[in-house]
Length: 153
Image 1 (cartoon, rainbow, N blue to C red):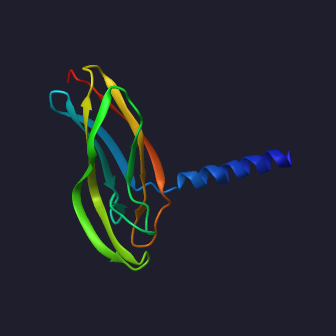
Image 2: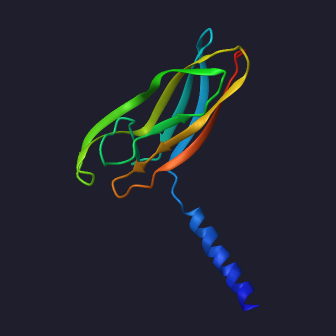
Image 3: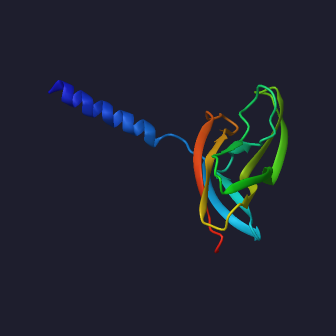
C-alpha cells in the first residue's frame, strides 16, 4: 500500500514539473507558391514578450544559433539558404562576452524550394534553436516540422 501511495505521489510531482516547462516560442509553417514550380517555405516563430531567438549567424562559443535541417525528398530541391525576415537586433551580451544577433516578437525564416514534379509532397525536417530573456536562457531545442506543398493551390 505504501508503494502505491508513493508511486501516485511521485507521478503527481513528475507530471506537475512537465506542466511548468517553459515554451516561449510558437511555430507555424506554410508553403507559398511564388511562380511555376517555385515555392517559399515559411517557418515563423512568434515569441512571448521579453524573449528572443538567435539568428543563424552566430559564431564562436556563445548561444546556439537557429538552424534548419531538411530531410531528403526526391521531389524537392532547395534553392539557396534560409533567409531571416524580421527586426534584427544586434547587441553586446556580457554573459556570453560577445556581440549577438537575435529577434524578438516575431521572425519569419524562409527557404525557397523548387518542385521537381507537380505532385503533392511534404517538406520535413527540424529546427534547432535557443531562446533567452533578460534573466535566463533555455536549453537548445529541436522541433520537427512538416510543410505540405500542393501544386494545385
